[in-house]
Length: 505
Image 1 (cartoon, rainbow, N blue to C red):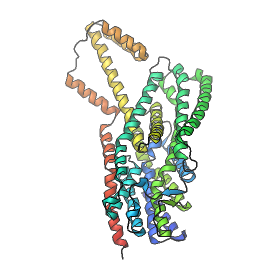
Image 2 (cartoon, helix red, strand yellow):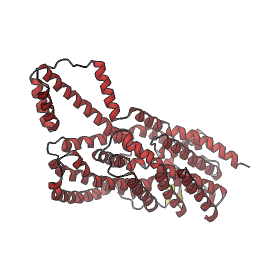
Image 3 (cartoon, rainbow, N blue to C red):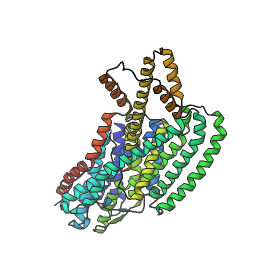
Image 4 (cartoon, rainbow, N blue to C red):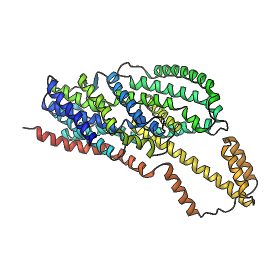
């Protein structure tokens, strides 16, 4: 109840401020501001979880720390790098020239804002992280069709958005899984984890700084300064190289105090994860605040000039409203989605969270260069899926290997103690040594029959998989992705007719 009261207080406060202090204020602008504030809070509640969820799930930072960092950097990104103008039609999804007049455009934008916000609210309540960009695009599309018919839509853009449903999570998942496999091969599968960590962690952190610097230059600061792809990549490379050297020097100096186990290696990724959460939040605030304030700025611009423009100036009060809305929504309702992303889909640790953060940055950079339509939400969740499914595959493969060892020793008449000793040696052996042990084992004889039936083994395998990646949650999230655009479009069309009915004399 206290969260609801705080949210209502913010929305009502925005409406009152707009009505009593903005020079050209009207009832229409006040209602639009209320819808924009509601949308900003829902973006904060749903979308920001992707930036900090893995770090919280891995226990690199607490929930309170994550909320404070994300709230500050989301607001900073919106205010500092949100830009002075915004596109009035998100992603060019409709052609405003086909609208009858500015009043129709205003009603359309009001319906789109409210519909997108309502859909995000439903998704957040159900624990499904969805794309806020897809929500507002679907809402603009639905309200536009309701206002001017099917011809107003840019169906090529719609096709790109549909393509992003597949491209974004698949790219994110593949890249995250590739990074996790790299980390396992170069660090956790080694017999001397300390030596491997001293060698590889500086490279991994330097690579992370390179990618995140490039990501910030290309996406987070694009409203302040325009830098082309290759110069941005080179600037990021220089920064990453400097950090690599500093981390290597520092790690070598303290390596004698580093334990040679996985937990100690995981702790080396804590500080990089804190910085990645902050930078992702900054870039998200600078980019996605437009989903809340873009339609509001367009309405404000249309009310001032009675015309529809392709770009609209963003008054300071609108920018501050969007920034505060993101932070307030995150603080009040963000923890639910943070837990979903961070721990409910699959178990998280610092190295897995690192791989997910890297996947988010690398995928956006790659998509930017190739001109591919991607959703940062879908990338992040796809990366979580990728990490979980890779763990599932590796665990299942390992269990098959263990079963082969047990069966072979049983055929050879070995006692349980010798089997236990062999498995203990196999557990700690590096990857190359494991391969040699298996070749030697299989060369000694054929496998015997398992003590479990095929049906029993399949049942055990299903239980094992369900513990690594929650299938029901995967289905729920994918279903929410698929219906986001049509659901927000239908809702916006209904709201457009409702608003027009109220507004017409």
